[in-house]
Image 1 (tube, rainbow, N blue to C red):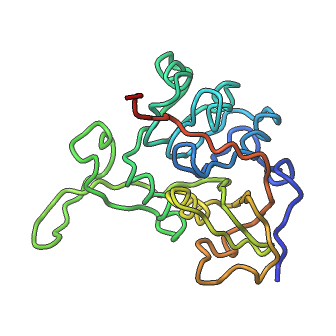
Image 2 (image 1 turned 90 degrees about the vertical axis):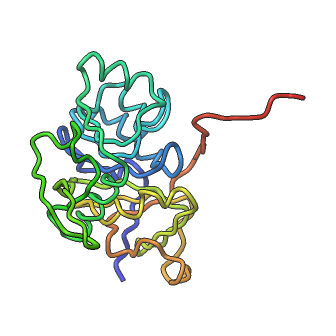
Image 3 (image 1 turned 45 degrees about the vertical axis):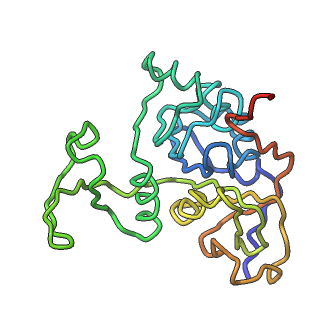
Length: 237
């Protein structure tokens, strides 16, 4: 059995160069690859295109790479928690491609399944459809227009799992399953950081969400903060 373990985040991100496209897992601040992001900041690699559900917050997650202006383009579905993102977008410093969340997820899946394109009704008749092919299909007896969207092409996919083994099999928890599993399938090289790394054979096969065949490098991270984007509490009575 192939051992896919690397020593740390610095070793895991080896080969990421200027101008590359990265898929970065997570949903909000849940299940984000914190160690790999911190390592990328230290390398100074620049002109990155990042495909991610969101852009983190100002001082955490992908917000750290935005602060250092290492990201050239963001492809995301939600960016409302990051003031620096907003500033760079409005000033023209950052190229932004806003994608409906379901379309973002399915374009990741398509890449993992080897499909070049998908067709979706989301975005038809809006600015998102400008310059893209629209075709009519009959579904459930009704003809509708569908927008053609291309599968993503990412040089690396960087994901975070709760537990993994030395063969690269991964288990996620709760909300971290929203984007990490599909991105893990889709990168030319997939890097996984995990909270706990165990020997191959210790994970229950029925509990594995990402088979190790998709993972090229895995390591055990540390110092996970697990922040909450917006804490909402009741007022004192």
